[in-house]
Amino acid sequence: MQTALTRDAGIEVPLICGAMYPCSNPELIAAVSGAGGMGIIQPISMTYVHGHDLREGIRLIRRITDRPIGFNAIVEQSAKIYLDRMRKWIDVALEEGVRFFVTALGNPRWVVERVHAVGGVVYHDVTSRKWAQKALQGGVDGLICVNARAGGHAGTTDPRALYEELHDLGVPLVCAGGIGDPARFREALDMGYAGVQMGTRFIATEECKVHPDYKAAIVRAHAEDIVLTERISGVPVAVIRSETIDKVGTKAGPLAKRMLRHPKLKHYMRMFYSLQSLWQLKRASLRGLSYKDVFQAGKSVDGIDGVLPAGEVVRRFAAALEDRAA
Image (tube, rainbow, N blue to C red; front, side):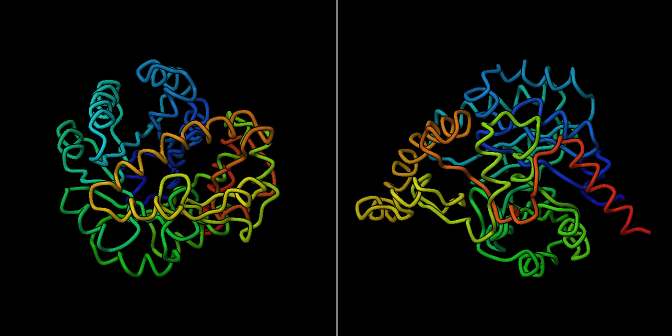
C-alpha cells in the first residue's frame, strides 16, 4: 500500500518504529527496516545505552539491512552542549546516507535546511495544532501526531480528534500512540493517516535489548495500568504503574513545580529530571525489576499479547493491509 509516508520514507509498509530511549538498539532498527517498515535511530540510546559510536552503529545497521532508516533529532534549545552534539550527530547521519529525520521539542528549521539540502525529508512530533503550525513554519514535510494513548511524552487528544484538528494542514500525518495490533493499524489508516508510529509494540520483540522483565510487564499490562508521571522529565510521561511509581508518586514536588513554571528556571529543572531519569530508565530497562522499575509504555499494551520477532510484527501489520485492500 502506497501512502505519502511510504513515498517520503522510501518504505513498503507505512509503519515507523519510533525512536525510544533506552530501547532503540541497532538490531531492532535493522529488523524493522529490513521487513519493510522504518526503524528510527535514537542517538542517545545508540551511544549512551548500547555503547556504539554513532557512525559505527549506523554501519552496523547497514551490514544487517540496506533498507531505509531514519534518525531522531531532539532540537530543544535550552542545553547548548546537547544541541552542539546533536548538530554533529546529524552531520554523521547525513554523511552515512540517512535521509529521513524526525524532529521534536523545538524549532526544526536548522535541521530542515541541512536535510533538504541533500534531498531528505523531515517530519516533526506534535501534540496540537499550535505546535503543528510552528513546525510547518519551520519547513517540515510531515507531522508525527502524538496522541493521548502514546507512551513516553504523550499528547492529550485521542487519535481521531487529533486527525480532525490537523488534517487540513496539507501535509502527511502519522498516527503515534495506541497502535498495538493490526486492527488499530487499519483503523488509523481508515481515519486518513498516512501511516503509524509504534514504540511499545516493538519493545516487546526479540531484537529489542531490554530486560525480559520490561517485555513481560508490557505483555501483562492493560490500558488502565498506564499512568502519567511528572517525575521523569518535568512534564507528563506515560509509564506502567508499579510499586516504584506508587511509592514515589507521579507529581512534581512544590519547589519543582514552582521552578517548572518559571520562564528561565524551568529549563534547569527539566535538565535535572532528565539527567536523573536517563540513569534510572537505563538501569530499569536493562537490568529488570531488581532495580527501580520505571517502564515507559503506552496504552497500546492492550493489543500486545506476546513477544515476537520485530520483522514478524511488521509482516502481520502488512498482512492486515492486504486484507483491507481485498
